[in-house]
View 1 (cartoon, helix red, strand yellow):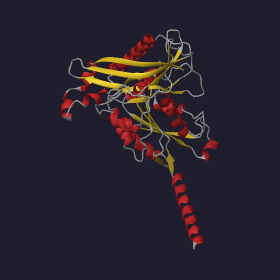
View 2 (cartoon, helix red, strand yellow):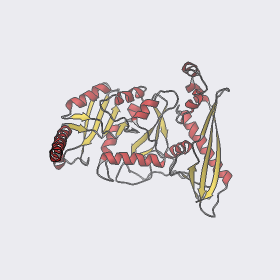
View 3 (cartoon, one colour):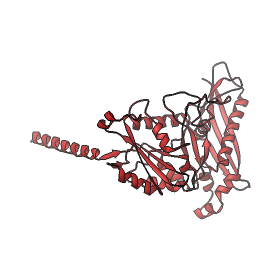
View 4 (cartoon, helix red, strand yellow):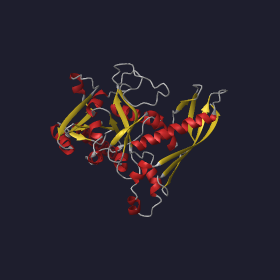
Length: 376
């Protein structure tokens, strides 16, 4: 009886495996999705997917075992439908690891609507990383190659996680972007990408090399694609960029940062560690409104090389104030002061009647730093 049962289970497993294999052969597993807009407003949708072994043996276009398919249309749905119509296999979006939006599409007023349309695509994996690039998304994904490892899916996930973990980019997914875009409480910061042409020696920021954005970093590598900094939004569209250092400060304010290092007056390195999430406050009883931030952190210095503590705290305070004002100038409430302000109202109608965007744009900031200095 047991032998018959085992044989039956084995037969069922073989049947399921055969059906699954046949299904995969009939589908094209999309790893990267890219969306562009032309100057006239037309859409281009492109996907990057693994190429089968037979195709790899006869084609060598520098894509390392992956193929790129593209289609165009007057609307996003037209372009996506055309791509599906002309692709010889069913497109499967359940394995998408990265969604790349070109600059021209990201700066348009209907950017939030575009994200919702992407999210509505069948079987789309909305936990995919959301990247806004400075150039065309198609050019970006063509330049993107897994030069560390072989699988683009694992490489993309590990790369995004690595940069976000160090604090130089946000970890925004499509789910995050759709949820926060236009919600009125917090404006999403999206991963900023660009291609570095390595055509000339990049100029290094003499005061802080990390205070830069993707596309111009002073480096050389087999990978032209860079993820560094953030694309700031105003709840409707992308309005500008934040540097990698500004993103590291935002992660510090959020209570988690891995690699934030600044230098003191004597050019000695100081490691900054978060003591916990900063305390945000919003005073709406005055005009202009007052938005305050209180940060507790630990600053580690080399043994026997204690810095002038007041100068270091003042430097950190000044940098955070500059970052806050930069986001304010872009119309971006990237820290979520809106959440703090909204708690002061009993109804949504009362909250909406104050015109938070206008209040935020005119608000005054104050920053308090509570630093504890220790030897590293």
